[in-house]
Length: 228
Image 1 (tube, rainbow, N blue to C red):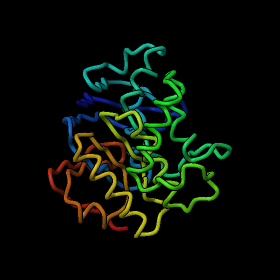
Image 2 (cartoon, one colour; image 1 turned 90 degrees about the horizontal axis):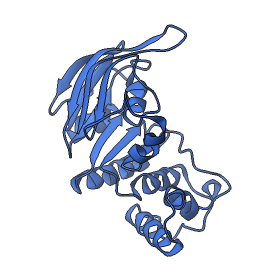
Image 3 (cartoon, rainbow, N blue to C red; image 1 turned 45 degrees about the horizontal axis):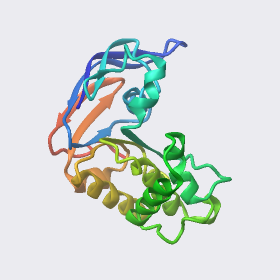
């Protein structure tokens, strides 16, 4: 499903974020991306949904070459990719249901279809009774659940998450992980960048470690492996 070949990323200021990354991730896998702050994890995540382009190398997602992809093709790529951020990125002036439905409205779906899918996604993440609430009326854990609902509303084949539990207490963090685990069981590929040692160690999923922009470890069932 995903293949990075000899991928390097150097930003305009000369900072090297990634160096010669080679990585394959199959359909339906659950992969933790770990490493120290500044290692290049977020850059790698952004390459997968074409927020960034590599300086060198090739990035394939669903057999589509993201390096050669034209700008007008990017929205079509992103329809099949759900993204979850650490800082939520919910629109403050829209309700939870409206935030969740926004991506479908852009696609021109009927109001009835949008409402049906939005409510189903909110039910799935445990926010069935919160659709009319605004983000500021939710707890941090509920806001992140809303982000998960928004990411999965279009039934993406790939879900990427950048530190999705970083701002949450342990109970809410594990609630989010239960959601991601169950979404993965349904067949969605999940890639999660994280510093959460306890989560990585307990879940025993594939672990890809990045240090100084280089891939230094790839274990089928690994541990976090860093001091926190």
